[in-house]
Length: 225
Image (cartoon, rainbow, N blue to C red):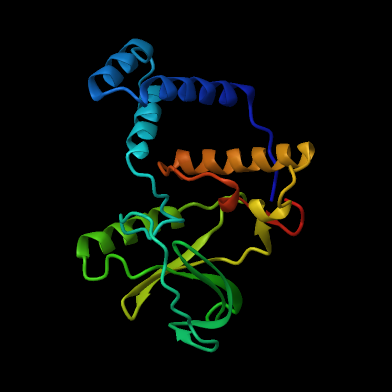
């Protein structure tokens, strides 16, 4: 992954947005409007950025880490996918891991002869057309992101009532597993933090807010980046 410098003006901009968000997020709608009217009368772009964060606060689930169907997080029931199972052009090779919001498998894309990660989501929302439409809409939005600091989404689909995402297969580990029980060295932390901010900035530029930034959702590649 590349590690571009973040301009100081961008950092200062996000400090301003963060400060306004913190001042407004626990207020009612009228108070929020008053705060933004006073602080952003000459800067409608900053107001939209703060309003976007406030709107996202109402939903605790992040799309890529949630079921994508608008349901509250709940432990996923283990539904193993056997080795060799064909899901369209994807052949399941091995189980990678399970989280509360789904199971991830390594698979082979027969069409493009590459390895991918297939994340099967819980069956929450099955039979709900509106929820499935939202899932597909958000998947399309996320798939439009093409950035070296963001995991790429290749495909989305459904099999036997279970939605799935096909993503870039990353070789490495989540940041939470990199130094369990010990702090990450400061230099390494600074590099990873900068890359995460750059990736988040690229997503924000496309109108996508992650909403669940934490070590479990930051992946450290085996290259050390």
